[in-house]
Image 1 (cartoon, rainbow, N blue to C red):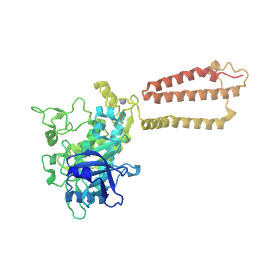
Image 2 (tube, protein in one colour):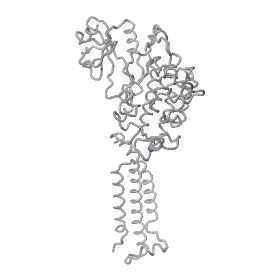
Image 3 (cartoon, protein in one colour):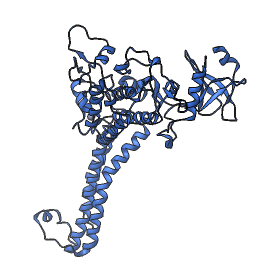
Image 4 (tube, rainbow, N blue to C red):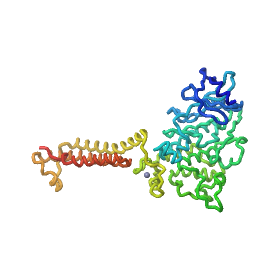
Length: 466
Ligand SMILES: [Zn+2]
């Protein structure tokens, strides 16, 4: 059967479209079928070895009822959703056409610090929050159409360098036929992501609910924000630690009410995330451990993550550190100092990251300066030559070299010169502050040289002209 697909049926009919689909290069093969590149730009084909009538009907329902892609406006495919059924010359349905997810890496490469450093350097905690936010938003969109993802796991989520995820393997979702009510189940699950109430049960024999997905979503978000599974830590009970599935089944995670697990020395504390996120994790893994209805919905995660993203602040010491302001200080700097481990080490920033940094820096610099210059110029414009201040001891010391000017003119000239010089020094100090925060040697050297240059220029600026 596999050979039939791979060698003979190279040109297929795309149901609902007049143009045929030509298979070009085989991308992957698995136990259930093959994935091929096609002559349709941006689309790949998945062909089953044994396309049963149920499988094809499930695909037809999916093709007819796609979820609304929350990232459609930015031309991003959030899910590799079946676009059309593919048939051979005899009209036999073999599989489907779906969008190709290019330039992305698996979720493991994103949340694992070692892999992240190698594959996506500079992908910081802000990016991880945004990735989690987008996954919650995509899950919400899929649930809104009545689908259950069923097998949420890192291998089924790809992420690009803009923190935009795409869910793949969508044909494994649980699908309900809106016309007949028939449920096409998701028979597969993954260890570490299956909710406790489904452990040890035959998934092919039961209908799943959104509540089951909520557990899986929480584990995925935990992986992104903390770099590890929630059901892990130092066992404090008798004997050896149970295996991870038993820990999950019994609800032993470091923040459980009656847990026998303590946080490990390298585990990132729950307090580092925004309080709303902390509450979501507590709700899912404590109250929601046995009662799926108490677990936060994707929409609740989305709201909490939006708040958390708005609360993140850039660290002044390391360019890849972002920390929750509600936590009060940069946890990553503390961790680097106390444990000698930095999961977000300084990295050469990408063009987009530099642009974002520069925009933030420009806003920091120019807002107060523009205000000060506007206020000063308005004041000078109003006061003009009326300035006539009394002499002070300080001005006696600095103004003896202005003999040819009359007193009011000297004052105006001196005030303007001093104003310009002070503003320039302030500007240099502010630029230095922003640049030094990047911890880049070249920026620090540039800032220092600029400062020294201005100090050297100072006597010339205030030197009276004849
Ligand atoms: Zn820091």
